[in-house]
Amino acid sequence: MLPVNFRSYRKKLSHYRSAFRRFLNASEKNPPRGIDNLTKVVEPEVWQEIDCLSCANCCKKMTPTFTKQDLKRISAHFKQTPEEFTKQWLKKDSNKDLVNKTEPCQFLNLKDNKCSIYEIRPADCAGFPHLSKRKWVEYAHIHKQNIDYCPATFRMVEKIKAIAEGSK
Image (cartoon, rainbow, N blue to C red; front, side, top):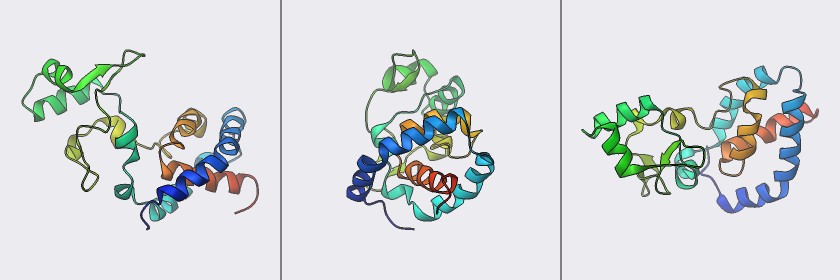
């Protein structure tokens, strides 16, 4: 597993973004046969290649949506009410979802890219980047967004596209 090389990642992203988005759009409407099983095979390969702690782009450039269960769990950890926690750390976005006020995430330790509340982190964080969580057609639109931020998502789409188009 190698650390993420952001220069290389950004270069590949600018070169392949359009092709990957076209693939994701097409596969969302007409998924290749067996793609759900393929993601389950490709995902472990991706995690052998990508070191999340060398990246943490998700925590630096994105924000999770906090559920009511997240609020109860995390605010209790800080000995706050959900309302106090919300007032201190969160805001409502354009969809009226509760999200972080700041970027990068207030719970990210920038020295080692580790989450200070990892054991109780929001469900959205725990599931990220949602590589094989559900059926491909339910998450292709999420992958379109995440390829811009997550080298693991980029690599998974790259591998699946190559396999689906008959090369590897």
